[in-house]
Length: 251
Image (cartoon, rainbow, N blue to C red; front, side, top):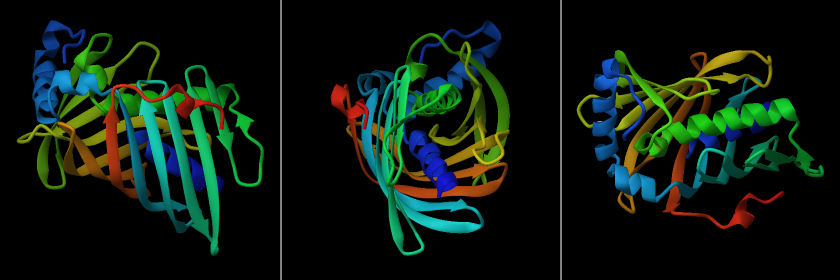
């Protein structure tokens, strides 16, 4: 279940407009401006940089599919807590993972809490950054660069792509429905836990619901190098201006 644990963590992280753009990226900025309006508006998104959500789904690993349920809390680009339970062979296993700034911990079944090593923390922070970009909240401020990357088809509908780049971080490609402006797909590079090699992670978003004025995707599907990885749905979500610091304490 080790790979299954990482799969759910990646999925959960996935659960959490004026930018520094070059003149030749005016089209990208226009796409993002429309997306921000579609998701509730730049001011509303900026007001709620934190959220807590409950989810359930299936993770595909080791040639099998395992059901899971859990809860994820995120705040900003570097605070993420994932607490979930997976089932395999009729037994249930609980995992907790926390990233808080420059610290990170993992608590596995029947084991003491383990501090993430340098490589684990670096990858966790990369994925937390990608999740933060996919929340669109950082696109309401400065510090990121946008570039238009063309049009693709997502679920048989045209979608416009924007590459989001940040200093010292991997790029994140966002695709917005051409008509509605809602985020329908994101792509980024992640390190596969099994092979240790970087792979392309594709996240599909759908079934949007209004939560305190913010549009939130309730259906999320994750693929790695085109293969099914996680299929999940959000069963409940709350957005917030700030979560209690204790949420991100060592488990």
